[in-house]
Amino acid sequence: MRPKLGLSPKKIARARKLAEAIAGPVREHIRRHTTATVERATLRLLGADGVNAEGVPVPNLAVAALSTEGLRRGAARWWLSAMAQCGCSSEELSKAVADGLDLSTVALVAPKELKGLAADLVKAAAKRIRAHAATRRREIERHKKREGSPLLYVIVATGSIYEDVKQAEAAAEQGADVIAVIRSTAQSLLDYVPFGATTEGFGGTYATQENFRIMRTALDACGERIGRYIRLVNYASGLCMPEIAAMGALERLDMMLNDSMYGILFRDINMQRTFVDQHFSRMVSAFAEIVINTGEDNYLTTADACEKAHTVLASQLINERLALDAGMPRRLMGLGHAFEIDPEMPDSFVLEVAQAQMAREIFPESPLKYMPPTKFMTGDIFKGYAVNAMFNFAGKLTGQSIQLLGMLTEAIHTPFMQDRYLAIANARYVMNSMAGLAEEVEFRRNGAVVRRARETLDRALALLGKVAKSGLFAAIEAGEFADVKRRPDGGKGLDGVAEKAGDYWNPAEDFLRASLGLGG
Image 1 (cartoon, one colour):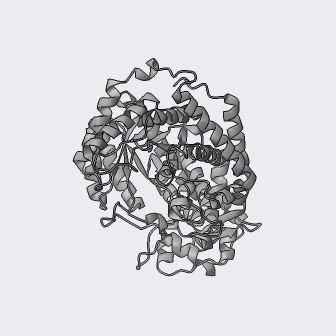
Image 2: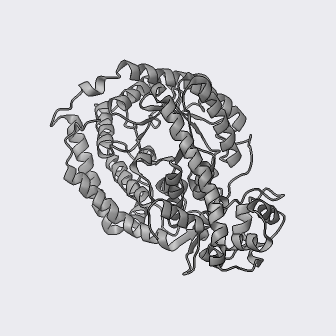
Image 3: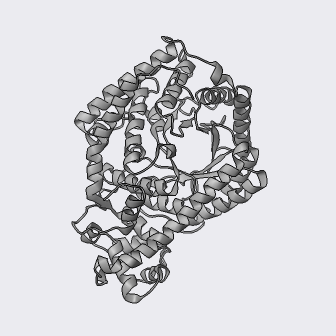
């Protein structure tokens, strides 16, 4: 979409420079630390899998057996040493760990003697992930003529993966392009990943590798029937962010919600841990060509969407920089924002259009994810349907990439199939009827839309300058984002952070960094 707002390129460049300065200390913290879940994700990429008789995952058993010193040197060292000494496969070693083998008792082999074995295991995982990426590219290209813009994104959340499949197939047949499987309530706070197919989630379905496989298989079959590629989404966030990213890469998920700021602010996950976790998970997603979705839209559910719009833009710029630092190209950065201004406010739609157009112009290469109204949905389904139509109009007018459809029953219950059908019908009608309107519309040089966008950019610049001086950790502690305050030493998961030793070794990380051109 061509620029229409006349935003200052110098100010945008200055904002990106400030974001880079903000990311610098975070990058240094990431470089010096690892976490329990980074090490577990590494073992998963090396083939660790399964659970013991009590249902504890093998990666958890393996990492828990190692002291903090073990984490500091890299869990892969012990896993690969055990494989080398017993001459077994990762599958066989997984069974031995599940049966009670304590990895901390394994005599270590020098890394130089393990590099060949490590390379073979990492290359096997990489081959599988690359094949998935090639399949995705091929299928999207094959069906692109049947695909609209923006992509229509809906959620399923029954608690049972098998019921989710039925609802996902129905949504795809009705016109959805993207299916997100909502996770069971509070899974982000579990410091392990459940195993196998699950049927008893609350408010959503557990993210497991088997559930990913079941839904991927079903959507592929459905897509073949209807002649479209259906994208699958889940959540690489929370205390197991890197592990879920690895599982998603291994099972060909297409998008993953992936944002440490969301976890810090809205799930009270320790910031020292989750910035490290995010970096590793984004390297995995970048290598797998998975689009990430960030969580800035959530800021507007706790802070005023009109007054604090600049915090969304500032966070998007910081998130963009952190993603670039993880080797992720902009075409994979689904930066989030939302249609959340009080609909009773005069000119609320004008302000929404200004913010959406501004985001589109500042991030022209990114597949922006536009979130629907939720905060002011009251249970009045008729007004809700009208507000969602306005949201769909704004999304199409401003060239958004991914449109998460609003439900007329928002604030009443988890959507039924018919609610989803009506949401898709609403979006298809609105977007089809105005398909060429964006090219016809211009904004007055000093009109309300342009003034609002420029004001928001100026305020974001001021906030970024403030954060650059204080540091991101201090800014979060001060409540600069979403009006939520978190301490650097607070929240969940700090005990899973370890400073890397001088001889730390992680062959999966080394491979990802080399593949993504990140250097040593």
